[in-house]
Image (cartoon, rainbow, N blue to C red; front, top):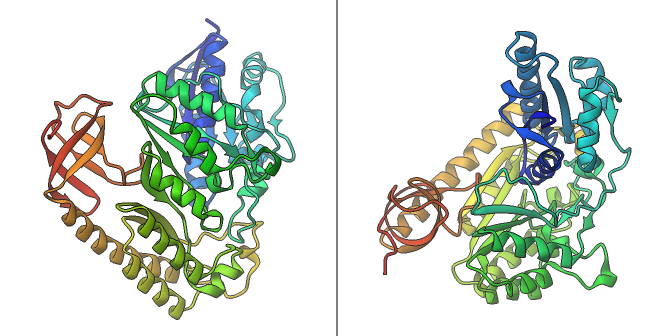
Length: 442
């Protein structure tokens, strides 16, 4: 046994997959995973998407360094900061956080064992980072799963080709790179064979899958149809789709493939035409309305999940009112609103007509109040219905419209086995929380 390590994984599910890859490499090299206070080395895998994520990462790092200083960790414990924060700000953080032993960029997940070994030996660099991220992910090998056995994430691509004015992800993660289709299918098949009931497909933009390599003929629709043929009692959930890349073939795939959940995660960000244009979203309000209408026509019972950004530069009270009316009109099954975060290095950060932070928050609160009312009504409409759910933990399950960690839950009988897909009857609701009775209702 080489030693003990801990992983602190922050941010999105895409980061979590990177954490699983790093953890697996360390386990295969003979290290044992433990909690941070017992570890010889702690890897903090960070997010840097918005200010609150950066602050969360810095707080986690400082908590670890304080514990080490106070003798609440093994002598000589090494603290490595990985992921987006390290990729974007390593040069500054070396000076601001000298107590961190190394900063590890997003391309270095496959080198984590070597970096850890060098750090524990007292050597190595302070920064391990490629200037531009170009790694094509290949996660077909085993991973040290940090999710429950019944639910898993599969990252089908890395990076992003969009230039949304408010977003720094392409600067951090590089351009879009799809994994080869056979590689993705092998991973899905292995997960299904090992008992995964829910397989969540993720990327910065899942609908762009294969379009960076047109000669391959790969598309998200093709991937889903091929994955739908894999034997086993599991389902596929598609996250992080972009409205600009939907087409009739993909819509038909959602309608026809039994293993593909009737759930679409489609961040829209806004509906006002001038804001969509200024923020480089490659869509218009009319296009979005037509797409959502078509999805609901073609896929009966589909659950639409979206997010909005309130207070984008140049947003007027009229734009805000239009967004409120749009939300009332389309009554999304699942939705969230976030105040705009002004990120340095982005186009939006340099725009004139920045909206005051108090106005951003007020508008976001108003939208969230509308969404809460809609959620109450949608939840009430589920009462009396039978629902197929996946039991996540004792007494807690999720339905088709509930992605892990971001959507609602269904409260079920605690006797139902964790990891089981079963049918229950909904008896009550509070917004996105449903309450059910029954075990395998006929």
